[in-house]
Amino acid sequence: MKRLSELYWDVTQEEFLSLEEFLRRVKDGRYGTYPPEDIVSFLREVEANILANIDLKLEEAPQLAPLREDRIRETKQLIEDLITRYGRAWPAGARRWEAPP
Image (cartoon, rainbow, N blue to C red; front, top):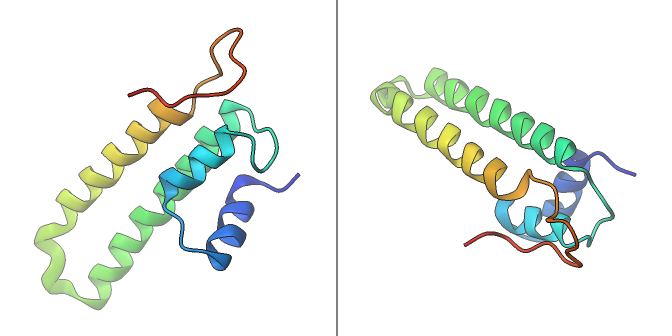
């Protein structure tokens, strides 16, 4: 089975898909079964890539430096939220995973 990061890039090359929609599909079993640890690992990889891109963009456009800390904070908050919502095991006895409200 493909690693989630490979799968994500393959899927997003074929259609525009938000990270959250991709995670919904993963949890719904559309791409097979992935344990919560794989989802958390995938999200940490995405986080690392986004944070690296923030610094790369600052090299290209130093005038954006004042925005750096806010973007880093927003990114970390987004990833933590997604981990909380999608990086957990299914509730016992559940037939289908449902995202919390």
